[in-house]
Length: 340
Image 1 (spheres, rainbow, N blue to C red):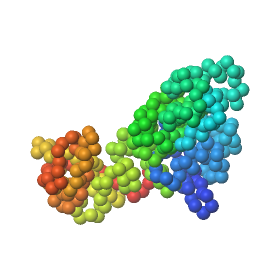
Image 2 (tube, helix red, strand yellow):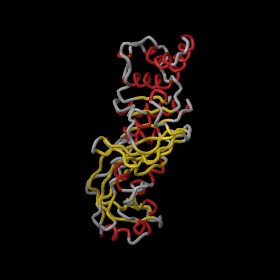
Image 3 (cartoon, rainbow, N blue to C red):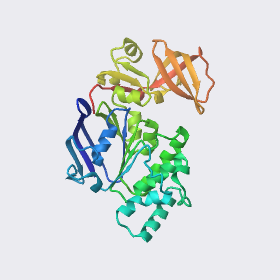
Image 4 (cartoon, rainbow, N blue to C red):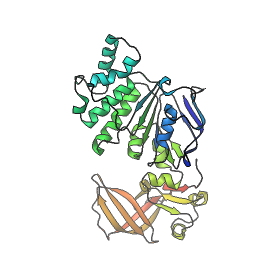
């Protein structure tokens, strides 16, 4: 549906995007994930038509959209601060875009009521938006973005101002609503857990580049470079040249394929099972153990003095405990220096 090719942008001497290429399929939610300043919001603004000075091509269904002004692209936008009109009621906020389209009053009323039911705001039509909770305001902003039936929905950190518990719940609800509407969407966030919950595909960005784009499960299981692995919260990353890695792993296939570092994926580390011949068995000592509710976050020091972190199911563990662990061979992942 949407294709970006070699898109570059700079604010004066500061380069914000460097030859970014991405595709968005019909009905897909694509998440732009990365730290602050990585270029993800700039890319969103270029697609929306809010930034017009850039190199490269943005094509919608094969048509270059650069000459089309933002208000004629038929895209829906939702921002972190929601940008609601404080002097209008819930229903009036949602109806704003429909009035601009020239829809008749009766049809507007029916569409607004339908949208309010879809986003869980039934019976709040006359409420002042300032009196709503953060989660309710987020739903109003989403309904207002959905109202004109946009060709493409774009969301820039839409849950960023909400607390963590509410953010987790609304991420799932937001995905359900967008999918039920049959929309294509681009979703910007810096939170990888949020991206996993919302996206069909994730593009990890940094320094104006796309480092990897994959389905959430594939991204988690097989990060392709050190930046992606560390940004996703994985700390078991070691230079290929580290002699301790060679002592621990030997010249494995993963070691030979790596052009930079080795990741020992935390999901592949477990308590040792002497019956499992497909795993490496390692003796270690517990350096830290932090209870996280349903699991304990453990860091151990191996005999070769490598620190490995992983999660254990709810199990009493204390600092200083000796622990035999196993590392599945398929969780030893080569990381590369080159971008994908």
